[in-house]
Image (tube, rainbow, N blue to C red; front, side, top):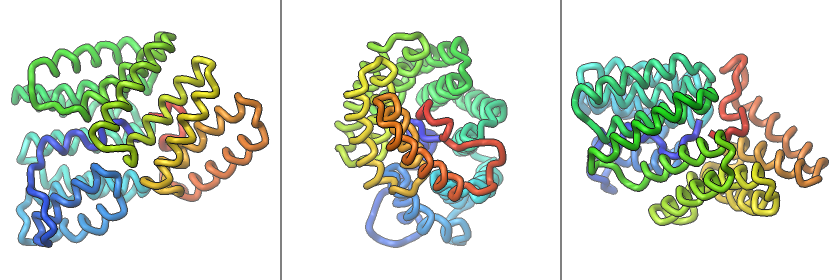
Length: 317
């Protein structure tokens, strides 16, 4: 559910000025900024009324639906997210770049629901649209996302192929920033895990974490998530001390940013419970796991029969 590069596709298509003023276009810009920061409840409050604001163009209303959908997704409101993504696609169908961005974002919802084939089809369609426009930056982001998606399915050969293509596309553009390269490094680290190369995995996650800290500081939700991934890599390498230390720091950041009752935080708790159990803290691990699972079940209810959003815990993706 939570890749490193949150809504990467949308940043390619939105370039509105940020302002404290309250006209609809500035509010839309603010909604995207808050989404990037992980403030999803505020995104919903701002974006929902914008979807029916007549002073916005059809394109802008489509973008409002898109950022609203992503916020709903992160809040665990899957049915609302599905409806919002469908609305965004309908309104954005005449703009190839935004339509491709909405396809890519919608694909992450299907990935979260473990409907991988649909997610892949959506992202491949988006990639085709980017190829037609020679948009190498967006193609690089989409290929990296497809690599991540293939690794989620344990299709390592295809994941490796898409990752190589992401690297190639990245050499053909200057549009990419360090948020992208942080995400790329994280996916490279995950591939190293599949290859059994613990040293490379830890190094990749550390590199990704350093880029995010440099860009966003310590109190940033993806810094917290990156610490969880790094902790998992340490655990797989048998270093439970560093695993526990990084995961505790990650949980603290996620609690302050995403919130202690968010799906992100609860999935991170499930990951930490695994490390506690491996460290011999069986009772504490059992209590933490049952608590997190109960809250996740309450959060998702019957929205996603047969699937556990990000609770395929831990892959930590």
